[in-house]
Image (cartoon, rainbow, N blue to C red; front, top):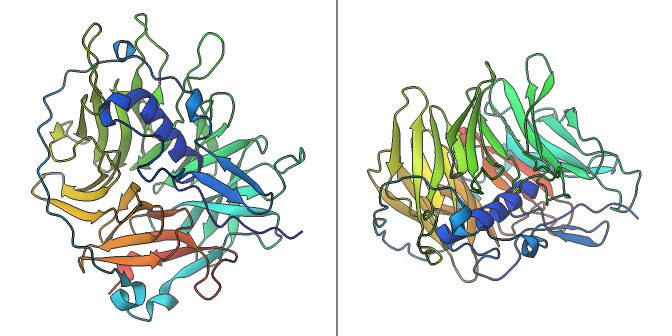
Length: 445
């Protein structure tokens, strides 16, 4: 039977986003009152492959994770967290279509890359677009059934958007190991890969591909306990200007304190700096690194109720070493940073909000409608986008309006400095093979 590509990709961008959610819930339940399943009650992280009639929920094993007691978690002295400045509600109005917002010619400006290979033996999961807008970064996945012991290995590919030519830059040892979170700067492409077991993608290894000499090297891997088991955490990372930032779960210290470390590597020197011993959600846009700093009660102190622990967004300027705390983002569940713009999803997954690093304003971009929920935002100079359960939507920062890009969410949308990336069925053939769509946002009217 011919392979039919997956119409629904993971709503949290393949393995890594799911693992990030699980790690946050295990370690930071007290901070956000994290619910493994968003408010709608739906399991949003299912990848369905119609070729195998199998559906793998990345949250299926979440019940096996055990919340660490408050007394065993690391503490960091932080300032009190002020109440976030209230924002006005967003009027519920119909979103503009792409043609209404940007003209009929927008359809001819988009680039399309098939999800399925011409040989029909693998499908692509898009990850990101390079900062110069020339290449799509994706993972290639065998279309054979899961129980085929001779399945080809998975790979990391770079695809020339203009010509469609693809080059494999990395391969996993076998098909049970999955690559994810593929990002780049001018000189490097990074990704993390891991098997589902042991520890639900916890046995991760991070690699860096040198775009100049085409060499690949390992740059980090998961810590393991004395029994050889990895600590829960997925090692997903971001890179900009030769600096890689990631979060990893460390082994408990002598007092049994479990730390989540935010680390940064200088790719030129190989030097690794620990930015936080109690941090989550690191992101980078030169010259700033931002992360959520968690403060949990010291040993013996009363355990806060869910949502009552302190957590603040910390921003570090790498060039001058100045660090500051943002007041407006109140316990974000997800966040994104680009230049001076900071976007986050509220802790209840119901709002997308925007501010700048000087916090001169706070703007609610969108609010949940019906049973939807939000996660995983991205921002560049022109657009803001985020994950939702139903559609692919962007906020046009110039036109100041919401625009529906795809009426059916196919599981991946993101922004690079130049490009908007999303997956959806072709507009003239809904329900058939999906396409990877790329739109240069610098050319929008």
